[in-house]
Image 1 (cartoon, helix red, strand yellow):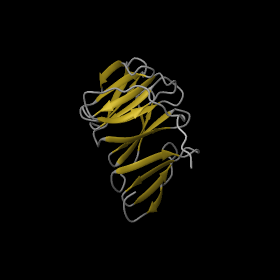
Image 2: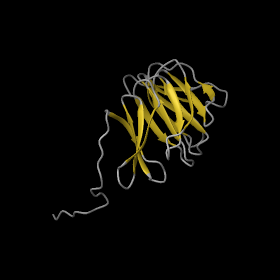
Image 3: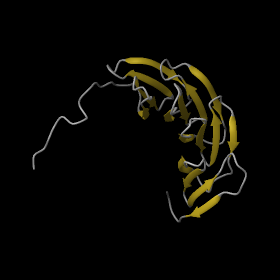
Length: 184
């Protein structure tokens, strides 16, 4: 067997931040690598050189997720303090910051069209608009939400210890529970 070298990955640049990195993301245009830290700071590193472009404190405690908007120049940032913020990934300008006091926000997902942002606030789900309004507050889950996603038809799937729940946040109706013994 012959090993080939030089595929799609190659050495580029490296950078060091002042704190532990808790999340990373690339915006759609690839202009920067966004990195979140345990101290609640988001930093943007130039995509070509690795030079620090900007830094912004956005949470009291760790930042858990960075989710670039699927179509717009917008970055969702969630934190240990229950905050959900929207930043401009190009310059770090804060569009808005909201906070729900019932748990840290460890998971987030945009709808494919980018209209709604689903966030897991501990044991509860929230759907946020791009303008910073909470459009839906879900019922308490069995335990802390460990994973979430939107289905193509607009339903929300959330996983936690004890099972999976499928529900339609913006349409009335009971959720569908899929029990599972153990962690997911």
